[in-house]
Length: 173
Image (tube, rainbow, N blue to C red; front, side, top):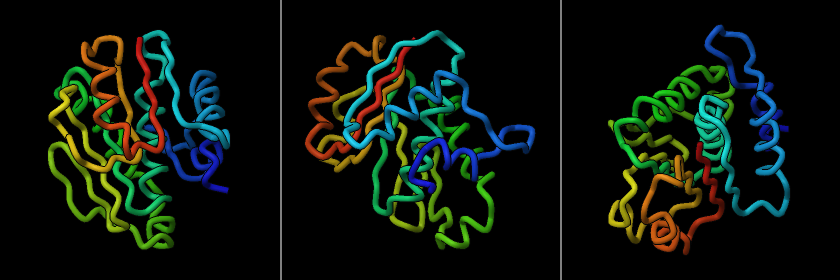
């Protein structure tokens, strides 16, 4: 049941109030696209404050906890904004997962730095600046690009990451 993003959210993701999180219409649309069997990449522009960052954090969380040994990279024009937005959201979601899920999956946080989180299942999340040298040569399974229309070398970045990338999501305002 939990490989489906909407069911994953329903069962395991809590909102700031502690109540189950409910996807908005944009997030539901994105979830339907990423859950299709032929999903490889997604490129979407939507208005500011529409839930894109939260969606990416939920997607990254599901990928990392349900698929061992994954490497998810979150790229944006500003590392500081990424830390305050996406990374903070991801950490909150991870910490709010039900303890019984963490116990069932035998999952815990192995290492936490200012730019990464490594889980006990071998999966790791990195937030990186939009620079081709950030992770050249690293095997990345999922590349999340925020505000891609503000990244001057976005196509070049995708070429650097492409060899091992299983899925690519680009969202922008």
